Length: 155
Image 1 (spheres, rainbow, N blue to C red):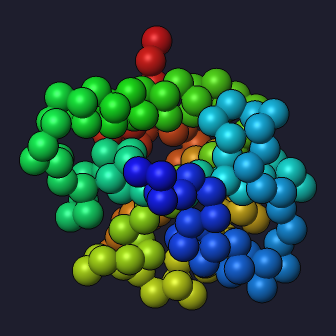
Image 2 (image 1 turned 180 degrees about the vertical axis):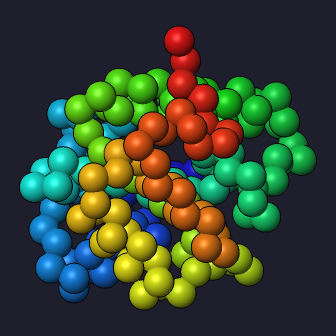
């Protein structure tokens, strides 16, 4: 567990390099914002979260429940999911939010990096308030993040 990184992960570095190459400037891991977003694009009023499929319980081939200590892992991962929903609920009124899932960058359903970056750049330049990029061209951009299937905001 000690060797598992929470910042500067490979998917995060790929996205950061690509955005920088496209001319976007950003800050990293702003602890002043709830949820400590991975990338903050202040000029575009946008936040990016790059989620690992296992840690954030994504419904893709990269997520499987561990076979040992199942109750511990279910509690831990479900708390992560609830924390994510709470964080998005707090941020959605003042920020545009983008979520990029690990499976869009690795695994059998990964997207071409240039395609992913083009989708991301289009969203950054748009006025859409929410973006979610998953593997195999599952890109969702919407005005209301609650419209995204599987994403629930607590009341």
